[in-house]
Length: 559
Image (cartoon, rainbow, N blue to C red; front, side):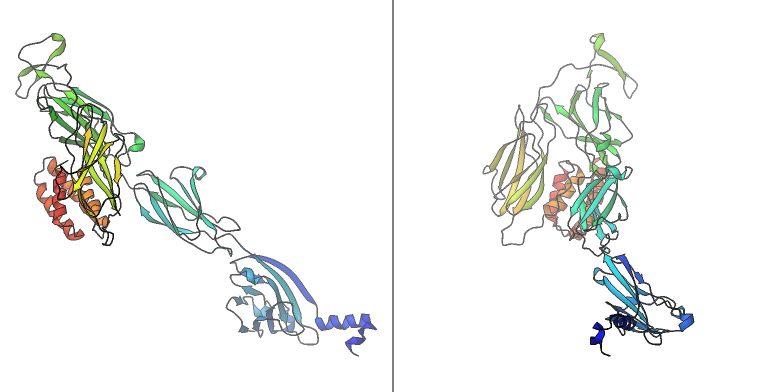
């Protein structure tokens, strides 16, 4: 009988076809990309003994397995298409379940298990339909890359993307002691990036940072949480509520409060008090005297001053990173020494160092304003044909500064042949000169108030290279130390020359020189030798020429 005659014997043919095809059990299973999946298949090995088995892709044919993946003889695996396909069950007990490692979306489809049971049409056949769907990306590993006063750079190492490409990253940042509910979020970071720099942070502040990966399925679990404290910076504000009072003809007391707590930018270490006397004849101030006291202090008395002399006094707070902005200059006159008693209401007595009494009275006159102090001019950057400058204003002479005048000339020219950028706003602290021709220039600045013009500032020497020459390295902008010694070192070594191949080592050595020079300024004359030695070390490390070292020394004299 041929199958073509089945149209006459329909029931008989259906029975034969059922016997030829064999009975097939079926089930469905869903798994996520990247997981290990086990497709179930068992037979009664106690009854049948150890039998051969195969697994294939697609519907089970009349013989064998379609697109065979793995085959076993009842004792061990004899053939395998890939190491991803495993028989991890107990073959001796008839567990021939297939395990697929790290499934992919392309693994979706029909899988067939066939156990060869002796006899006609006895094979055990089991079919599994597997659906593999993408999953969330795995959590990232995040590490610290670079920490500065106001920025933190972190880097992450992408893990498994869940079977669907990562579309973006998200970074959360919060105060260490705050809740994640209030965290600042930076979202939409390109999937091509593996690091980010967080800006506008506060110095000396601990932060928590975590990162998420995002694909079309959703957002991963949080990465490991980094706890990072930004570096200290110079204080961001001056001492507050500064008051001065003349106690005697030779003593002035100064009291103050620390800068606002949110402007400390670290641990306050000391206060610098600068004071100088006014020459009433020449109407000019003398050189600054410097006194430093611990940050635990909130008052100091200046001793051994001149009687009936007016002094200008300014303060600034300091951290290990540098000195903060100056307080407003205050004027205070010591009391007059008189040989006879004046009116009782304005006289008093102070005991001198030899035990005798001196009679004094307070001067009630006020001194008229004078021209302002010369500003301190700094180089920020030289790029192409532009020169960027920054300056620090000092005492305004008792009358508000109305403008700044900037002058520059060719190196070998006289100051009589200068170009002037006049009437710069008193609110400015930086400017950029553009369209400069290749040459070496000398630049200086003046401050003006209602009385007149200041003396010239320090002179900067700046070179604009030809476009065809190798550009001079300008380096990153230096920290603005508001005119302290460390600032001079950094301006000379970091900005003006910037030839060091190790900026961190240059900065460290620069701080050493600054500390030694400051000790010398404060009275430790032995430190001047140490300064010279450290400058020699700096030259050896950075390759900076001695001419620059000499410039640094000249700039020190401005402090």
